[in-house]
Amino acid sequence: MSDRTNAAQQVGVLRGQGRSAEADTLLRIAAQPSSQWLGEQGAREIADQVSRRATEAGRTAVFVAYDIPHRDCGQYSAGGAPDAASYRSWITGVAEALGDRKAWVVLEPDAVAHTLDSCGVKGDLAAERYGLLAFAVQELKKRPNVRVYLDAGNPGWAQDPEDLAAALRKSGIAAADGFAVNVANFYPTDRNAAYGNRLSVALGGKHFVIDTSRSGNGSAGADSWCNPPGRALGEAPTTETGRPGVDAYLWIKNPGESDGQCGRGEPPAGQFWLPYALGLAQAAH
Image (tube, rainbow, N blue to C red; front, side, top):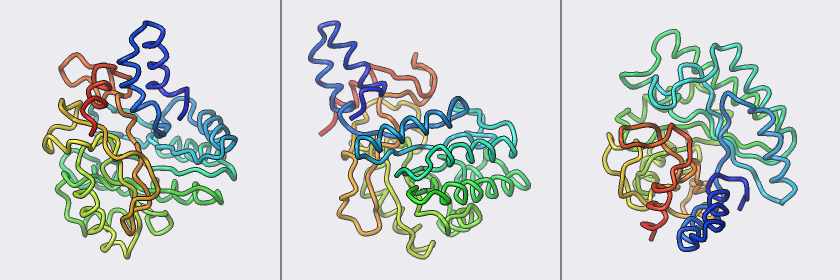
């Protein structure tokens, strides 16, 4: 448990306000390890500090690299590096910051899957993206203790597994440790495991990790990905999944952080939203 996560800091605020029942509920989130997202601002410094603290504590930091150009199809998390050269410099800085420390990196949520749907980059821009992802894998894998998992969408995306496997191969999956599924989504673990296993077969047996941060009540449907009500925390993070080929359940999305301003008064993407966090924790089994 880190005392620096949004959830942990909010627990302290609630205790200070005498709201002990809510603080205890929120501890269901704050007491679990979750990932550190790296975006445009300060990524190298954050990667250095977080990996250093994790190493000192005898732990392994989990990062999400999220700065690919033309990110998120211009939706709630739009942004990313301004061009290919900037991205290469950015990811090299992150890799150098990790040095020889242990770390796991989930690489660019949605970046590959969006090249296969109606809103993502196509043609030369898609080819550039695959090249940037392959470069990122290569740079990160120069570090002896870094594991890399390329994001591979979720079961609600309608791609053909062979098309997705081909796109992942162009993106350097051969040199990566595997792929990640269900990042920032809600699908139940059984369905994610089945999806991942199909993709693993298409990729010659690559292992994968599953984001279980908000999968406790499953999905509200493929179109309900932006702060849908009624969701719950899923399985706690662990490397003991009991599923062959599944390297870990991880809380890749930080539970309680908004998916974006989707029209119900939510804060912008990535900001902590206490009512939603409490709902996820209270609904957890």
